[in-house]
Length: 330
Image (cartoon, one colour):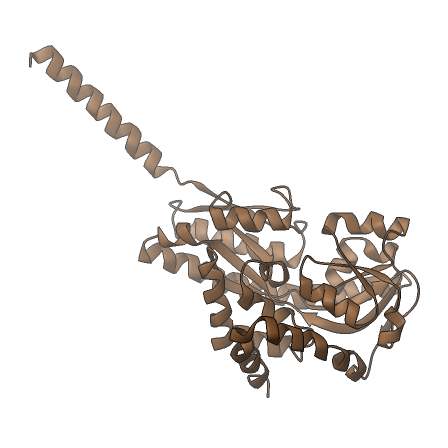
């Protein structure tokens, strides 16, 4: 090779290495899906997660949160994180039951006694079993966020007994267990996208829905459905998840950073949730919403037996997990 060609070749090779190093030094942005507005407790936790990752990795890893469902609806986002089209997200375990049967167990009505009991279960062996099911579905759980206790609200009247649901149309998340739950109480369940609920309440397409205080407040649903009945039938954790293949591609040091960020974000989110739940409760009461507590939920709980029986028949391999969750709360 003559001197000119040799010099040119070396120059091109050096330039290629320089480009490769430059592109490698620039971290790919991890896009995080979030259905909630920026000021919501889940959003606060996710921003903490992203901030710590960005800081502790020295810029080698970069995470960003996209709030308000701008990256798509929840069912689509779940599939996108599983496939790697999106990198990470926080999902309610209700919809995740569609892709991992283990996640469906926490959707059994009244399976948790209270929020503290839910924390104990999810942070223990039963929570790990649920995590294992999600891992098989392509989602790597990093922590469990709060989403409070869900209760019924409607446009017609207070709900004090199961009979008060009779004939009413309630929006539920996309999960057969919720359809069965409402049917067992005498109501009519309508799976519907979250963004469609407000207008559907306003126009009478549905009579009610069910959710926690912060969502009832932030969605504006309290403006249309002025009766909130504290059934607390579901206490659903939310999963801070990352795409499994992306997680597996990380070094041990990077995984440590990610897990430390997740743990810190869980602490921040749970504290923010507890504070926001009280604020939202007071806000809707001050707005004139009629809130009724249900001292004895036995009639509602008894009505769920057929739901539990059908679940056991359809999922015999999950019987031990159901029992483990119940035993952990004794």
